[in-house]
Image 1 (cartoon, helix red, strand yellow):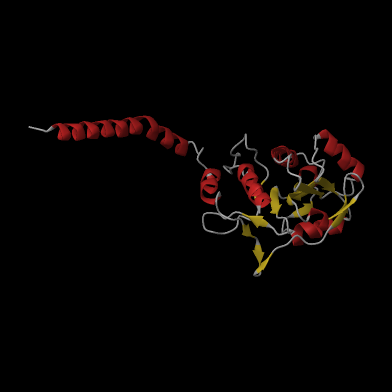
Image 2 (spheres, rainbow, N blue to C red):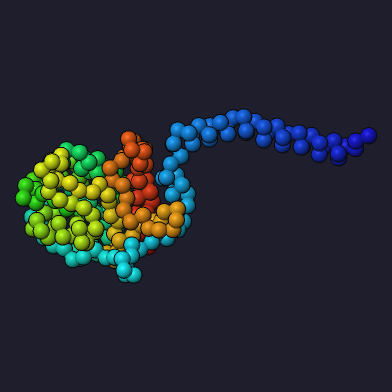
Length: 247
């Protein structure tokens, strides 16, 4: 005859088994559906893996890459240099105001960053126009107002054509060129660069332990994934900005 203690253990095993069974019936199909629907994407994995990990330095030829010196006029016709960003965490983009394709999405994503870190005096954005002949300070000022940019450390920068292109290609290794066949007459990257308070390029690592270097600026958090299956990276960029602000 089973004792009272053995009966209690048997009932406990039965209840545990029932809980496991119910969990399997209810939750496992949902997890499988998420995987099939691709809602568990690169962002989820990268966030879970990298949240507690220090951001990597972007290295070239064994040396940490630092933002090179620059000096351009902003939307208020004030000269702004790389030195003005020292002590701040900031995001860099290359854009132009008449861009009909990716720039409006990039601006929307940068506005999301602005609104997230609106209370942070040591956060900023540097937007370099690749069409400086048209994007004069007054044009950039109008663009700032149109898009409700309020961060005093978000500068829209213009100046010498060759100097800006040299900064894009040799300073950040981001493609930018005039192309009459491209929408708006210019081709450029939709990636965003993250810079720490000392002026070094930083990023989290991918699944293989390599810095991702840049963050995708052409997919919004609301979109989640674009038509090519590329996930948004604004969520992880927010996380990484917060890390650098805390350093």
